Length: 227
Image (cartoon, rainbow, N blue to C red; front, side):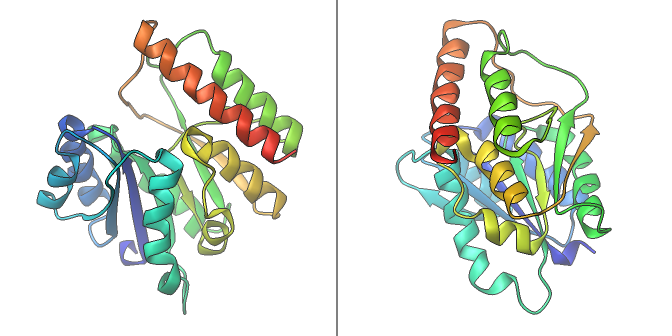
């Protein structure tokens, strides 16, 4: 079943965790095509991906998560949907060994339960005061009526038609909100699935707050663009 799966891993300066993430994905999807979308990393992320046997689509400068993922998506979309479209799995490069949980998302799509499966982290790690996530939740609800538990989760699986509909992705950190809104408005079914995942968490530090401020700005831009 994995032969009809394409995995796109987004990464920016994730050389220290990407190898473990890719090893887990290889174990979980042994026959899948795995592509790393490297968003202008400066730490050897692309080299780690290549050594792990993944295809690499690299932007020489940082263009944001949505932009890097779009580059990878365009590489496969021209021929991937015929005659039988694969299931597309989107993964953040910092999941490490917990990426082995992701076949549950692909299976939900393959079984016809939904067109877009979104992972809900069973455990909360790090984070700030919930302002950015709260805005994302409200934005999606206002635009689509959906009440999402994990509005910005980057761990997703999509059917071929749904994937083609949501590409190009919204810029930067707006990728997930835009994807959810575009899929819902096109009539695709969305399901959230709790999984025991772990990622590189940002805490209540200056760096963490700056990161979430950038997220919030991108979320606002996507919301305004889809009103």
